[in-house]
Length: 325
Image (tube, one colour):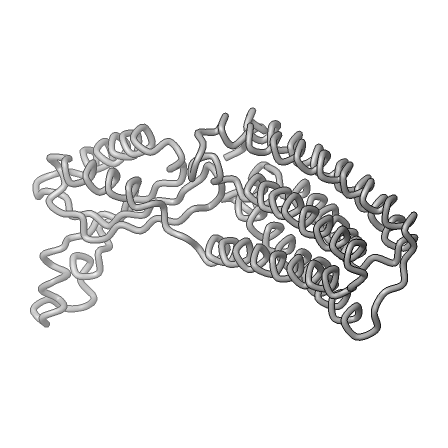
């Protein structure tokens, strides 16, 4: 099924582009300021911004692509793949480098000039404003998409919110570490700031990576949607029982539904086809994201009898081969 980019996709693309532009400018400023000041906390934040910039390029590649003959279910899971790479980037480029800077500062100390630190703090102040503006843009989109869990369903948007929120907190840690270093003359404050930033990035990377992993493996639809689908099927007068109901999220707005149903006796093939079409339409109306619906019509009684050894395994009734729809 081919789909054109919807308004949500366009808003997500704009949000990612805003975050990318902010992070590229901030990364350059932080790197220059960190090198001039010799500040481990500022260099950690520079690595953080570089990681975020690369991750946002990944996320832009993950936005909607139409289905084709090689990928008939579409490219919905591509968002989850790029989100997983983004999590790896945060962990390696952000978290590990921040830990390295913190450990090196504790081992070797740091040389800095007062003027270098003033420039560094000015850079962090601008970064705080830019990251805050980007975070507000992302949170505004979350609210427009329903807020809470509904607003955070898009993995690209979820990653941007996590990155920008972490960036704001990380900048505040860096500013605190640099100020305390200047006041006390003890580099341990900046080293602690770098280590804290590293720990924060590792936690965020783990959270994003775990979520992307579950989606890539094949997460079922949420319990409420599954409950509504099962209730609808069980309410159909032509269905004796729902033997199995399987769901899997194929993308942000795409869910596969596969149900094994036992129909009431006495229906001919034409009636079975009409019932299947009506049920599919009802399911799609009840759960709009269910755009891939498959019904397997089986004879539950015969299948259970076969399991007890009363019907041969080759019987179509035993194997559920009365057909699917």
